Image 1 (spheres, rainbow, N blue to C red):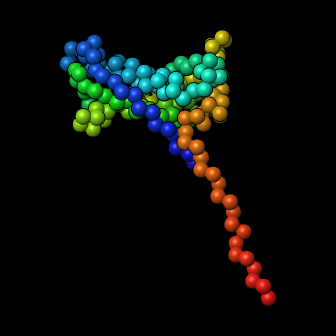
Image 2 (image 1 turned 120 degrees about the vertical axis):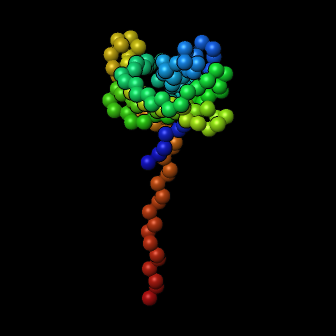
Image 3 (image 1 turned 135 degrees about the vertical axis):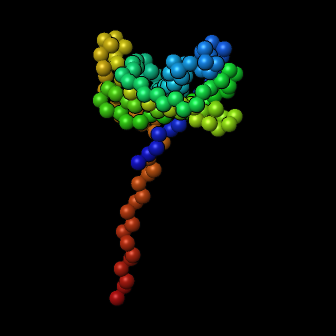
Length: 150
């Protein structure tokens, strides 16, 4: 089974991202995850998919593990998971490369919608495959040893 391709999106904490506690506000992590997802989509989606689908969020799950601080350089690493019907899950890990710390984990369920009708639209298999490593070619079956001549 092929593995999802990982996409990396660099981020820098701006002064506007900081809350009264002196670290990145929880809502900002959600924006970081969305920014990474959009950048990944734009980098991978072929024009026929990019023009033929919009995405809306059905669910976000965020685990806040450590605070990001003013001026931190961060990295959002994202990949897709299961796709079923019109839904596709996406994962994002936000890290601080300077100390290799994982700051947050995000799981989002996105729903593909038709840009005109705004109705859910099944995620095409060809689109899903763009986000995965190509499957290794199946090895040809070996016919076994040659029979010995008598």
